[in-house]
Each structure stands twice: as structure tokens, then as C-alpha cells.
Image (cartoon, rainbow, N blue to C red):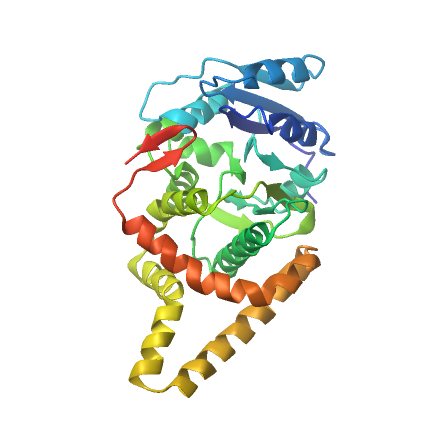
Length: 333
């Protein structure tokens, strides 16, 4: 049996989030976990974010807002804000999330339920908001769930892949062992960088793949924003071991490889390979959707087969194209 529950610190960096921050904070303040502090750090917002947050938390003593978040070291932007909040936090466990996230009431409890001694990280799961309409939003949700499912599967073999900072639990002991964000070089994927730094220090990791811990985010509204997001993520992915990068590349180029197979061998062989892979992927994702209580997305699986074959090719091309990444109102090469 676990000892009495520890204080958990939720760390939230915000930057021009006036359209979503109140929904996020409302979901955080309704958590059923009893020992929480919520630390919000503003990253130079120029809209009404600070005003909205200040008004919302004035009668909520568990919440604190910090307007000037600077630390010595290498951290920049969001990572610097999170480093500052971590220095102010009192909890033995940190929960990182983003302002565009909606959390189920049992989110903190479910993440903590996965915790055990020796772990440095618990990786949460994210999907697109259930109320988001349109085919593109559903495709993005299935894409996220497929990615988290693959991360979870490899994790069962103790192979670390990645983590997303919008749903991530980190032990203070592990965070401090790597020196915090202020000791890590700047990265467009600061969550990926922190996760791997902690694993390299010898800490274990686990996954929270359950409906009670499943958080929801907003979809990218257009193809340009989606490609920009994927380019940022791919800057982290290319740092993985060569064999893993090779598998991801083969997955991205699956449709071109099928076309090459059809030309070099025969169309029936290529169609058979496509059919078998589509069936296996569909059965696998259908099982994962049931585990996450997201059955309604199952009807979109046939269309996702096409999306999952075409869009990674576009994303790879965009990654190779010499254009800067837009991120939190900033541009990075």
C-alpha cells in the first residue's frame, strides 16, 4: 500500500492564451486529488491572459500566478518559465501541462496511480477534444492516439521514445538530478529533451494509458499549422537512435514504398501488403480506442488509413524544406 499521498505541483506556462486558459484552469481546480498546488507562469503575454488568470485565482489559494519568470542558465521561453516554476514548487512530484488542455476530474489521481518508487517520469496520453468537429480534427486525434500507443508498446520493452509536456509527471528528485530545464540546452521539444535526460540518469518511466488520465487538446485548424507542429516534433524525433529513426522513416514512407513494390514486383503483392498492414493497424487502434473509452473515433479508422499514409509524406517534405518553425508566437530556425 502506498504511503499518505504527497503534495503534487502542477506547472503551467502560459503565453497569449486568453481563448483557452480559463477552461484549463477550471478543469485543474476541479481535480479530485486532495493535495495540489497550481503554479502558473506568464511567458510575456500581450493579450488578456494575465488579467483573466488573476481574476480566476483570486479566491483559490492553491493557485499562484508569477509574471516575471527568469532563471540563470540555458533555458529560454517556455522552458525558462517552467524552470522558474519548478524552483517555486513545493511538491515532490511535478505535473506539466499546457493552457490549451482540458483535464478530466481524475487526471491527477490517475497519473499518481501509475507512480512507484524508482520512476522518474509518468507519460500521460492526449487526444483531440471530443467536441471538436470535422474530419481533420478526428484524424489528428487518431494520429495522436496511434503515436501514444506505439510509445506505450515500446515502453513495455523498456525502450524510451518520447513524452509530451502537456501531460507529464516528473519526480522532483529526477528533475533536480538533471539540473532542471536551466541546465539543458535550448530545444524546440523541451519535453522530449527532459524525458531523455532523466532516463539517461537511470530513472525508470511508466505510461498512463487510461480514460481517467486522458487529457484533451485543441486541434490544429489548418494544414499549415499542422505541418509546423509536426516539423517541431520531428526536430526531437531525429535525436532518437538510428534504428528508431529508420522505423519512423519507413512508417512515414509506407505509401511510396508500396508504390515502389507495385512497380518493381507486382500490384497484387503491393495491394496484399497494404491490406494486411491496414487490417493489423485497424485492429490495433480499435483495441486502444476501447481502452481509452474513445469508441466513437472507430468509425473514422478507414479514412485514417489514407490520412496516415499521405500526411506523413507531406510532413517529411515540410521538415526538409528550409523554413523556420513558429512556436508560441516565436520563430526558430
